Length: 75
Image (cartoon, rainbow, N blue to C red; front, side, top):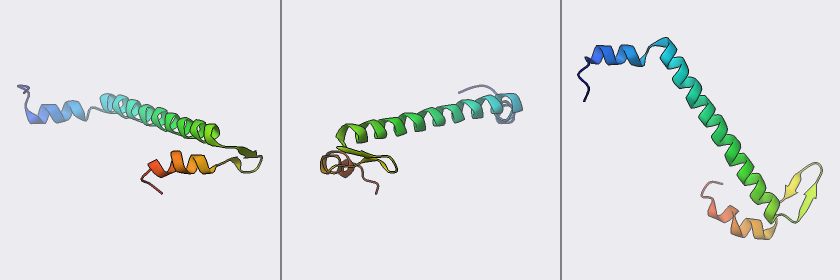
């Protein structure tokens, strides 16, 4: 454990410059994760899909439903 006083620890944590940098890093991480997740889902959907429509995009095949969608616990 550090020998700093709790008050000093909070002051360092809440320093505006440091807080801005931490929030920027966290937001960039979240954005990168969301882009990765969306890209991964779209690539799997395209791999397992058999048809594509201009208005709807890739149409989920039965194989996609059974091999991918059923593995996802979320609806």
